[in-house]
Image (cartoon, rainbow, N blue to C red; front, side, top):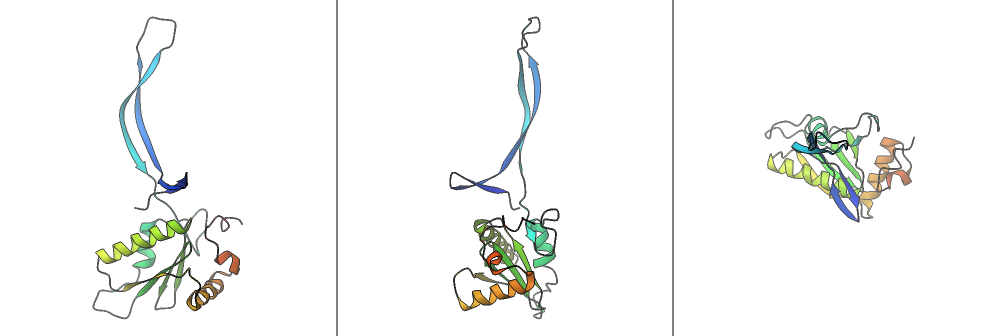
Length: 178
């Protein structure tokens, strides 16, 4: 699970909803004043899962969860260990997770910010490592200026049709503007 988080006081905090079942208790039944108080019968915490924009899907109404991305993009078409012809390469570029397959398909997951992209990448890395899926390789972060970064930017521009400025952004707030 990838819980929703936000930045407050320059610290990253997880968003937690707490629900409580209350019972109204009337302490004084025979007075004119309404002195009703509430008693907590039961309470529980609810962690809302973060959703991401996957390029090719509607960025507002068809956002995807970490589990969906894992099952339908990363693990899709992955064969057993002994079949070596299928593999995926996962890398990050600023707030984007790029998943390339050897069949030529490239999927782009847009995260809210760089910290969420790093958290997503690490969660994905730990899942793949734990399950010993050798068909998924991790190439790290391509945010530093290099020849590979420029090639990646050009590839993302050709796939998405976005401007170079839009590809180089660190947050997705600009992407949400129609």
